[in-house]
Image 1 (cartoon, rainbow, N blue to C red):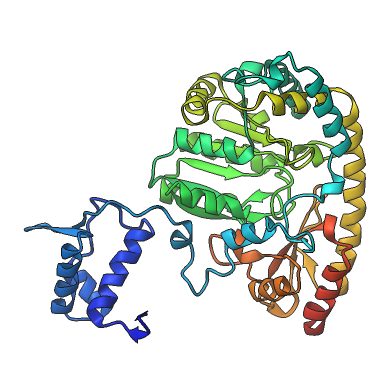
Image 2 (cartoon, rainbow, N blue to C red):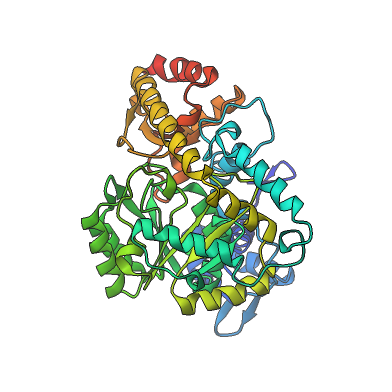
Length: 467
């Protein structure tokens, strides 16, 4: 640690430690600061050094003293910095936010095998253009005017409810709330169900934005080891018991990043554990339409009792027209709708109209059939490429765009990602998906980009030479 290029004094080191904990929300207003004795033992410095540091923090207005009780955080918090909540500076270069920033970079020359979406040319562009033109011609109707109803476009909610039956989920249109995206759905659910300091279980590995997102909600995150058939049940039971978790967030099918799908036996046991511990499950099913045949869904087995299902059409239709949904039991939808109104009024009637048009004109079914066939071909190609350079898939997915693969010789995936970005290739290293810091020698590969020459050349040069 330095100040103006000079080493920090011992007093300044103590002050910086407390400031850092406050900025990263480890210590919040009113929270007790470690006692003078505890800080002296932890730092190895004298009690007089700690007292001096605390006195200076009191003078700065960051903490205050309560005679006979100790020191407590006093200052209003600075604006939230997710970067400070996440890994420390030496590790921050490759974390979940690093991954998101690079994936979203507006550089058309980047190769993106680490991204979480399909290339633009693979999406339903013609169908979207047709639907937009149709909506524009209806200039005397609702899609071009005003706000939508609180729940969202009723005819789209009817279609979404009907589509749930393919997954054996019984839901009425009134059990569906339209949102701007899957992330927006998750934000509403977390606002509705969680308080700062609550604990949320996630898979390890899990979708890396879950980790950044949950940090923003200031909750504790506990990772549960993932298996090819779902979360490890023993670890899941222990995790609930130890943490008193309020919520479990998962992808039951076409799991991100592993591509795995939940088995029926694991699903039944999960629901039994959730019931025993009054745990709510959020099933993010954004890749549902990528399966040829549906695999078990927690929402179907549970009957939307303690499972909330969220989804959107950004991965299969387009991310340009933002439209997602929440499917849950009626009283929760009512509360979520009130929260939706309070925080954002209502969704875009134009977006809902466009999505409804795409889903009902017959083209979407054909589009998804072609997309699944194309992805199956690219999975086979990418699996062959990975094995050629000594990488081994954790499991062979039957659907979707992701392969979770191990680098040879324990190569550091984060270091590889840094090097690759300098060559114009965005990779997704395993550490950004993990709460435990494991999976450091894994990559998530998007097969839709598996044929890009720079990606193949990079693997052969940077991985193959170490095989």
